[in-house]
Image (tube, rainbow, N blue to C red; front, side):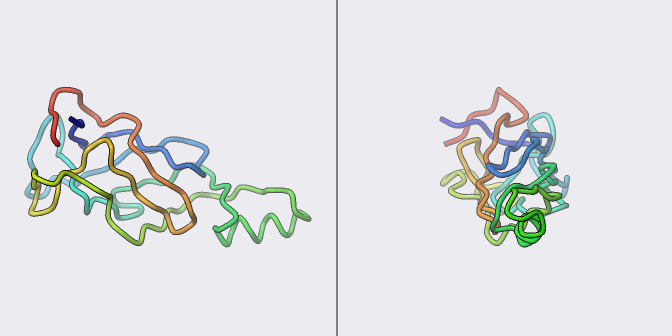
Length: 128
């Protein structure tokens, strides 16, 4: 079984240089230690904070900076673009009418990054 993810969880993007924290707004939520997350907690700069610098050439800012540097990869500030919810989420546990977020779920960034949970923010509540 996987662990329930809550506010304060540590996230990592495959193209980011630094980890980030998940922010879950305490609106109609269940609490473990802090508000628990669901698969719709995927809003950039609200739930998903930047990962420092981005090194993905799919990011237009990185591509432009790299071209200006004559092909030398030049990371630029990370501003995630999230087109879809976390997948897969918990099939049987709902939080705020959406599947609960567990530590095996992943999130795709439009700039080709894969966002994963490093630390779920708590270690006592298990969900499927």
